[in-house]
Image (tube, rainbow, N blue to C red; front, side):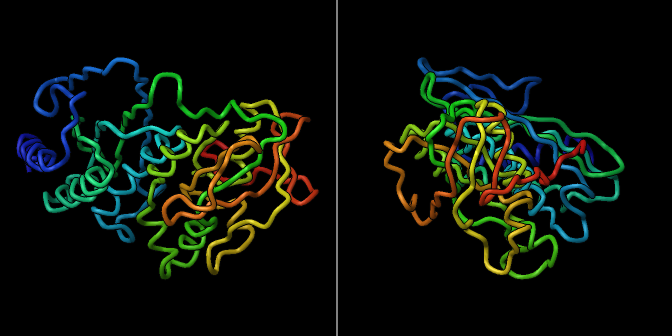
Length: 300
């Protein structure tokens, strides 16, 4: 399949997605053209999804890989309370993968994009010996209202959405709902927007494990954290998987005791797990004992 054929295929698939008034020109030219609205901040994030690191071709379908590649970046937008706008997709594939695989990848990606109201505005194609998907995603928030990691204050409560450990348990067992959760993660975009409107003090997504990500939030806010409550652990997952397992893509956030944080956003439960304290920045205690940051680190 030639590059021009793939471009034509992607262009046709992309036209089935929702348009955004901010995207003036999409696929077909050398650059996408964006015309931002006044009094809005545009947020950009990028993620690379790698064969044999984030997936294998014998365990994930092409549609699974397209979905996951976009879900990883959408989760970053969710963490900051952003409404998705557009994405750029650079895809490198081995020669042995046929046009059916490429079509499956984009169908998986565009199905999730349509669900989240996101436009595919462009990208790049290349040959490589493994599959590499590099995504740039853009979201928007009202000016100055993005949720940052650096806003947590002593006395704030610590919360997580959903359940923890499902993805790690799915990766370990390749069974049932947990495996489905690992293969097809669901970014918490709706919850992120709701939390931004509530005025939470800080937040991020749980991509590398609670123990590591909470430490990162505390370092940015120059505080420490006490986890003094039971965690919402996914069915069959272990405490170790809930504390240190990656790719849950739930939201971790903090809020003042004066903030009326609900027990659920839609059907998604919210659980208070501890408090922000003064002390050594980045230090995390779990029920009184130091919690080592064992989550996934590409360079660890």
